[in-house]
Amino acid sequence: MTPMLTSRSSARTSSPAGLLRHAGSAVVAGLLAATLVACSGPEAEPEPSSPAPSSPGETTAASPAAEAVEIPETSVGEQVRWVIGAIDPTVTREQGQVAEEAAVRLSPTALESISAEDLADVLGQLAGSGPWRAVAYDGTESEAMATIESHGGDRLDLAVSLGEGDLIEVLLFTPPFEHEAATSWEELEEAVAALPAPTTLVVTDVTDTASPQEVFAAGTPEEAGPIGSVFKLYVLGAVVEAVADGTITWEDRLTVTDELRSLPSGELQKEPAGTEVTVREAAQAMIEISDNTATDLLIDKVGRDAVEAQLVTMGHSDPALNTPFLTTRELFWLGWGDDGAYRERWRDGDEAARRALLAELPAGPPEITGALTDVVWADGLDWFATPADIVAAHSALAELATTPAGEPLAEILGANPGLAPDQVSQFETIAFKGASSIGELALSWRVTTPEGAWVVVLEASSPRGCRHDGRAGLRRGSGRRVRAAHSGWGVRTKPGPPPGAGSGAVSRTRWSSWSAASTSTNTGVPLVWMTWSLSCGAGVRASSRPPGWSTEREIRRPPPAGRSARVATSSTAV
Image (cartoon, rainbow, N blue to C red; front, side, top):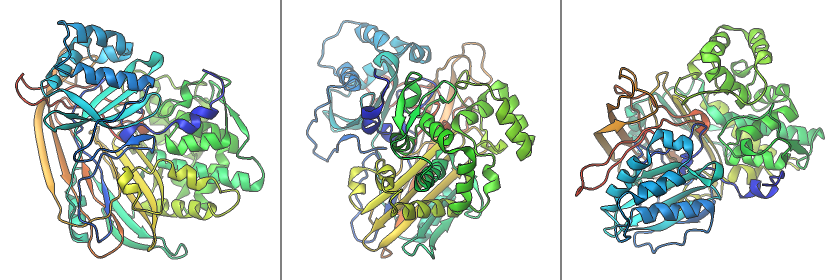
């Protein structure tokens, strides 16, 4: 591995479906409990949506009668081929061979979450529906999302992520999500209200940037909620202003140090001290794959005060909510370090006390043990904004993109559209930033069509440690709303006992998912429809991770032999 990240920075994309970015390694096999999807436009007939990849990457889309696609000759591609082979009943294997192979292909941390024998059991159940073939593939060197199809026509999305030594850290099976769209704004409002977590959705017409017009609002749009990594829009604004002022250039070099090294999401945290990237490369990684270390390098370069000033410049209605402005490394320390002691001091402190606390934090990467399961945004540990604030931030960046200093912005903000390829093609331009953290989800797009420009913002949060899962997209279409509910029983295994269980026990946990979908007719306005999952049953501690930073280590076992395989997980998205 070279100390330069030049080629890797341009090649890296965000984790497929947002499922693979996390600090705590985990191997999970399962059914993703819910998705977030978005729609727009009046004319086209509704059609099933494909899973929304988080980046353009290497993508081959599946169709109703798709042919098998070639899996790239990459490290993750080789592991994907192994998984598909392991669920192929036509391949003769001696008893225990799959478990032996899994034992050398899974990372040590992953094997603490699930034994090779248990994984082999899951793969054996899936083999009962095989053989399977890849009909779509989206991937980087270390992360991939493949759609696989059985001989009977059933499909699953297979997500694989590699860690150190190219060993598997994430293995996830999920069903491709399909939907039918709704017919009115009223149905959309009902759908938002029916979601099992407080959710705000706002669509704003920004065709006239001087006079944005709110087209639709549901929930509590006047309230500032936690926005996770969407805060990186403000860091990007500060970088552009510094370039415009001549303080820095896009080609200035930044150096990874242990003092500035954060935790995932991202790739840069894996690089050795002394690795250099340009400001341009760091900005791309910050937005495209939500790289936390790249973000902190940029904040260090322009200064915390410059980012705080951007809150005002970019139209934030209450900058004090984010003052002092946290780096990602600081959020890790404060939220999950020192057994919660930092968290209490932050919650109870004024601005001066909080700045003093930041100065006391230990140097080096955050030292955090175990999965990140505590909700911390309710203690003021996150970044906060109203939907209108995010609309203003997107509009400010759109204006900056027309200046010489902001010339790279269109590529930076558009590299990861947060949409499936068929959805991307329906818009002239897309700027996207999304985020998830424990107990929260935030999604934002600025899209343009020949008719105009719109910003779509979704904010959802819960103060409880409840799981929420998501996938997102924007689509033109009309039709009718569909709701679906699913529930079942699963067995959870993880290091240590779940709440209320004895040492080493395995608990049964109830899981449920809800979905609601909407679109509009004859409006020409981008409109979001979504599904949302929330699990708060006995024994379930899982919640989504701070911008992809952690995941619950959980597996739900498949049904008896002879029945269709169904396995589920608490892995989260975005």
